[in-house]
Length: 219
Image 1: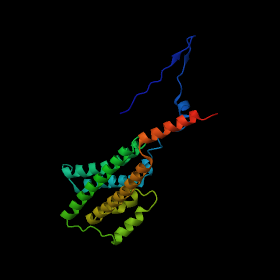
Image 2: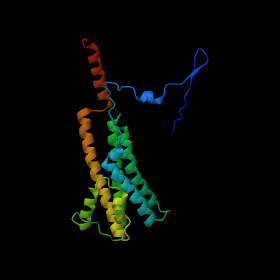
Image 3: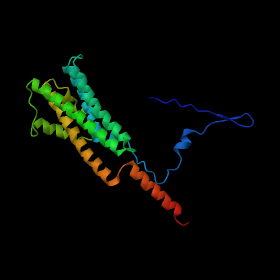
Image 4: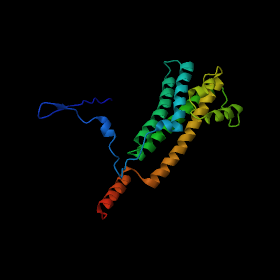
């Protein structure tokens, strides 16, 4: 929800209006020492988020192609794909003040994509489409494309929009598996960081003790 901001002016002793402090000057203030809220966000650089965006866009294309708009499965698949993407984003944004929330939301993203994967497998089973094994030539090709720096929807478009439903579904399944793998790695790292650094409460305590120590130090 957007928040409206209004700039008020103050009136001097001689009736002259002086502008309020500009935002640019606030942004130029020196950083506060001992900050306990670490840098956070930057979800666009997470490989898991980048892959989740591709999975979401691919799922929308897939559902528009193979499911009637009134089919409930269509809505569930799109929502699961969106949940995967959005929860990675929200977890990254929340990481500055709550590592617990970041872990929780990242895990929700992982669960949503697992649900989506099962929907694709249901589709394939209904059409008697075989899921590609790890040594399938197309899987090796997909693995190579996934290593492409900055890979996006266009990188996988030929497979996602292939005329053969077997190729289309398997390519998206492969992308979901890669995203789930990346999220598993991400969760392991978050757990290690939490055990090592703690959460916001621990950082606040350390920052407060450090500030007190600095104040008491002889000058």
